[in-house]
Length: 499
Image (tube, one colour):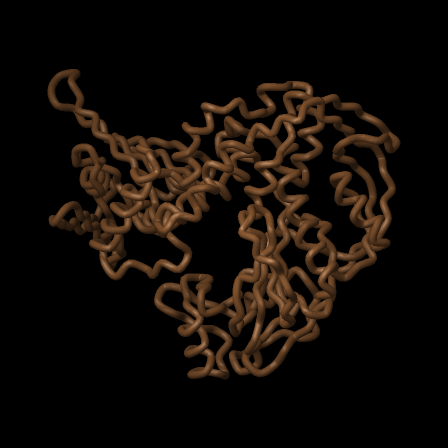
């Protein structure tokens, strides 16, 4: 097993303090130039992974010593050159190559690649107290992968290390069947539509959490085979196994799984708007009498095989989750959930991921939204739902759920107090958005009830900014901590009208 070399980077005046730790050793550099940083970061450390806690935070610091022009290039390009270094920087991978002349035309080339480790760890993992803890986290991840029989060559993401395993399966993509490309282009308009919403804001002493066990993986495991299908393009409805259609939808309901892309985020509004929708979404809306749809055209698909090409790899990952091994359980869960991101992966350089399949991406997120909506409507929770977070919901009413443990089944995930400040800011004793724990945010609000801005370590919450980042229309909004703790703010769906 490879070793771990961890790094941290901090501002110290106009300089950057770099720290490197490996085994029991630790060294530092106070850098005043990019040349010093490149020299330090490309030292050959033998067979080892080079890791940081959070890659974006790390690059924000070290890139500060690059010229402004180079920093701007890195915002739009994955690769650039400065002086005698090549810099490769994408979401979860930083590569630095240093080329130095030795004698005559002979050059020395040194290169290291860096990966963030925080997104590999269980959700409730505390921030590292020091660089030695980053090393320990990295070693724990490698040990967990080894117990799963995985020897990674890079640490981009949990699903990334399993990509090699997926290549052993005959998985359908746009490359394996060109006939699906036109329908895929329709799906690409809505394949990332997820449902996150806060229906009520405030502090709730007693809430109930429900979610699907392995929500996305359960839909992925049951994928049809897009390599074996018949596609028909029509401007009027025909019977089919599945379809992606274009047209004008009208939603009557205040709570609906139908998503609209504002260009700045996703909302679930009422009213009319044009867009692309799956046949299953339209059928759900019509059968419940919650809206109507006028179709322009669409692609109607029949599956010609009972194959479920993703079933075996997903089931293999799911089978690992039940083991009494927290790290293995966590890695298997993250890898399985990450498959959905491989289906719609488009890269900064304009290329598409090797498993790119917008039809399957659309099926995943669409069916998940419909399942959540069905749970809310079937359990009469319309007046009791507090928030929806992709594959689950938070309510102020308890309902009976049979926890079978099966993939895709609903489970009761616990009862607890909750503080809801927005769709992405929901604090519970076991949840810590913005890396702020429930106890920390509650202490801050109670200690300074008249503030609107709260800072905890390097994270902060600004109620004024939160008020501008909403997906529904609220009857007022908390302006201070006291408002958030003492009042409940109801909401209604935003209303759209077709142009």
